[in-house]
Structure formats: C-alpha cells, structure tokens
Length: 393
Ligand SMILES: [Zn+2]
Image (cartoon, rainbow, N blue to C red):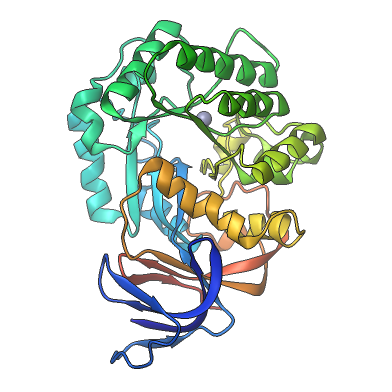
C-alpha cells in the first residue's frame, strides 16, 4: 500500500512525504516514492499520518460483563477512534491474576480483536488487595500490573509490588485512592504520596505509572517527584482537560476520580504543556443506561479522544499537534513498550463532527461529549499494515 502526499509525523515534526507499507512490520517513508510499483495507491493530500494512537487505559468488560462491552466491540470502538493499540484493565471476571485466566482472555483477544489489545494482570489476587500475584510467572503475558478500580491499600503489599517491578522490569499502573479521606482530591493525593515515599525508600528503580490524575495537588506532587529523580510517569483523561464539576448535567459526567474545579483543570492543562503529564488515556468505561442511573462510575472515550483533544488543546493554541501525538502515541508506546508494527492513523484536521453516541461502535453511550461539535477526524486506521477502519459518510 502506497500512501501519497500526506503530512507525515517523522521524529517529532510533520513533513510532506509518501508512506509505503511493505508488510506487518516494515515500511518506508520518502519525499517521493512514485517509483515504487504498487497496485494500491491512495492520495492523501492535505491529510496527516501519525503513528497509530495508543490508549493505555480502557475497560473492555469481557469476560464477565459482556452486556456493557466486549473485546470485539471495544476494539471496534478503538479503531474508530484511531487507536491501533489499547491496554485492557483487569476488572473483569474471572480476574486475570493467574496464567489460566490470562490465557482465557488472550484466546478471546486472538479470536475477536481487530487491533492490538494488550492486557494487564491484577496486582493482587481478585484485586482484593491481600495477596500479590506471581509476577515472575505472569510478566511475559501482560503489558503491566494494575488493580484499577481499586487502590492497593496495604503499604506492605505496594512495597512488595514496587520491589517486584524493579526485579522483573514490569510496569505498575496505580489507581490511587486512600479510603481514609472523603475529599477525592485528598484521597488521590495521599495515595500517590504514599507510593512516592515507597519509591524513594526502595533502592532500585522501578516502572511506576499513576492512572487518571485529576487534581492540582496530585500534579504538584508528581512534578516535584520527577524533579527529585523518582521513576514516575502519569496519565490524565480528556474529560479532566475539558470539563469541571460545574459542567455536570447528567450521569454521563460522573467518574472516579470525579471532575475537579477550574483550578484543577488549569493545573492539568499546565502539566500537559510542561511534560509532567506523559500520556492522555481515556479510561474508557462503558456502562448501560440503567447501570449509570444506578450509580455506576465512568465514561466512554475512545471515539471522541482525538477530536476532543484536537479541539480543546490544539485548535485553541495551547499545544501543537506534534505534542498531542507525543501524548497519545509516542509516549504511551515508549513507557508501556508497545510492540512495533506498521500501525498508523490518518487524520483530516479540517473535518468537523457533532458527537452522536448512537453511531458509536462501542456498546456504551455514556459520553459527556454528546451533542458537542468537535474538530478533526480520524479517517483511516491502519493496523499491522492493513486498513482496519475507514471513515464513510
Ligand atoms: Zn482507575
């Protein structure tokens, strides 16, 4: 496949070039590749090609909650959002905390996923916070370790997991919440603070990543930890960069951690600009209408992630498109060590789109972006050298 005349993201900037995809893992980029004989030539004048987008934090709900989402529908939602790789959180049933359960999920991924889907192992058995999983046995089959949805409350167990992370070179994705504090901002802050203290006192380096950072206080803590040379990375989600608690008009604005105030949103945007936030991840959390009304926390995000961030961060002049691609592809690939394939996302930045969840490929409809007009659109998703999704009117 030869993609001609696009602006292609190469080493941090865009150049007008051609892209020739040879196979699943090999490609060539050049100013003019017209001399290559190829029977599939696509003209992409005025369009942008970026490395495939990566979402390190999604909930696919299968096995156990297939009425909310499945690996098939979740990966379809991902491809429509331009994602070629996603990392699935372990709050499913049975829990991916031993080799049999991880294999069971991997079999569904191999059968149903239309893009690259990687799974997390739990940190503790059943995500119950009591017994650490066998990290050495599971590490080769998962992208990282997380009890997402639950924090690891025990200091001793988190200390052991940090030691395991250093020993086996595995990533911890920490859902930070300290149940002894009612204020969600204090709760997030105190649990991150605990982990940073543990990281300081463990004399080996580990791979520690904070999920869905939502508040100013937490960001200040992480910024200082990075300055102090502590091995910590973090993500935030699009909804925290666009909305505040003043915007909550329905259940579709409720997630954990909750939306903060203006001060939190501004601090998060500042942290995106100065590099304190490494990654934008959606925390895609599909629920049925009935489950949302009954108080289920979380919002979906993969099909609005790129255009919402393009509209609110790039169109407004806060960051450049190159920086957004760092946050949504380059940094997550690097930090999570996503395997390299011929994965690309093609963007039409001139397009405008009104969000209508009825048309989503996700089974979830719980988006806070419903009815909003967003700029920029994913028009093709190329995974392992093949077009897996194309925008059609
Ligand atoms: Zn979480």
